[in-house]
Length: 330
Image: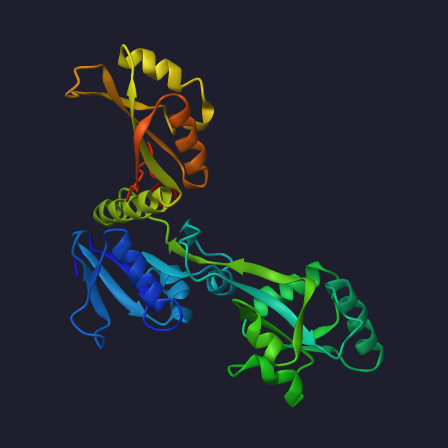
C-alpha cells in the first residue's frame, strides 16, 4: 500500500454490512472482494483505493487514529466512540440506510412513568431509598449525556454485552437504553418507550479524518472522486426529470412562459430543444428537474400549458457546483 492510497473502512458484518455494499454499488462504487473471508478489497472505479472490512465498533477509533481515512458507520456509534479531542468529522451525515434510535425504555408496570421528567422524579425516589436508578446500556456516553441534560441526576450505568431487553426482568437493571428500529423487541419484552427518551436518531454516515492538501494530495484526489459520486447520487434520490413536447414560436418564448410557474421552473430553469416533427410545426422538447414529491403537480401544470407526451426519468446523479463533503475533509 503506497502513501497515496485512500483507505476506507466498511462494516464487515452486522445490520449495516449488506445495505452498505448496496449503497456503494448504487453510487457506482462497487466493492471488488474476491471472497467473503478476505478483509481487504478495492473499489475499481476509484484508483488507489483500499477497502478494509472491520467491526462497526472499531471503525470510529480507526479513523481517529489515522489507520483509515474514511469510514461508513452508524451515527450512534460514531457519537458514542469518537475521541472528544479528536479531529474526526462527519463528511456525509445521511446515507439513507441504517435508520434507528437510541431510546430509554422502562418496564410496562411503571404506569406512572410516561416521560423523562417522570424518570427524573423516580431517580430521586430511588436515591432516597438508598440506591440509584440502574440503566443497562451499550451506549454509556450518549445515555449519560441525555439523562443529565434532562434532569436525571441519580443513576448508575450498567454495561452489558448481552441482550439488554432482558435486563429489568433478570434484575440487574431497572431500565435500559438501547438501539431500536421499530420498537417491537422492546414491546415484546414488556418494556415501553417514554416521551423525551430518545437520546439520538441515527443513520449511516461517512466519517473522515482531517486531511491536508500538502500531506495527503494523492488520498484527497481519490477521496474527492468517491465523495462526489456519493453526494451526487444522494442528491438525485429526491429528483425526477420531466420532459414534455410543446408548441411555440421560439425556445426563448417558451422558456419565458414556463418560468412564470414556480412548480415547473426546475432546479435552474427549463432545458429546451427543438423537435424536428414530421408535421413541420414548431415543436420543442421542454425538460425540467423537479422534486419527486412534486411530480404530479409538474405533470399537470405542463399539460395545462400545452405539454403533451410527458415522459419521466430518474437521474442517477445530480452534481452541484461544489462537493460539500469534500470541503469538510480539508
